[in-house]
Amino acid sequence: MSPSTSSVHVVAPDEHILTVQEALEPLYMKLEQEAEAKLLQAAVSAGWSAEEALKAIDELKRHELESIATQH
Image 1: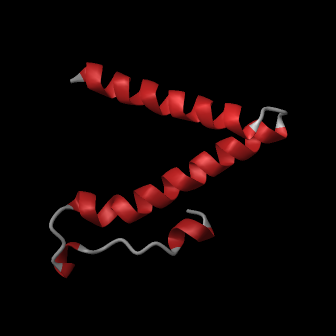
Image 2 (image 1 turned 120 degrees about the vertical axis):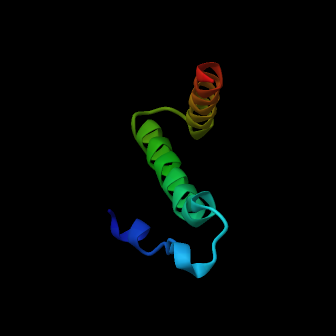
């Protein structure tokens, strides 16, 4: 685990959290933001514009959601 993700507090079950999803959500969101930032940085470093990279990232997310939806 990277130092930036280790600072996110995951709530223990005995701390009256309603679901494990709620306990993990802050870490999940932080990891998602870090991943998107790294993808953007890699694309821009390779010569793509930030706008092109963000469109590509959005398209990847859309494909992932479609893939999940068709599996159910």
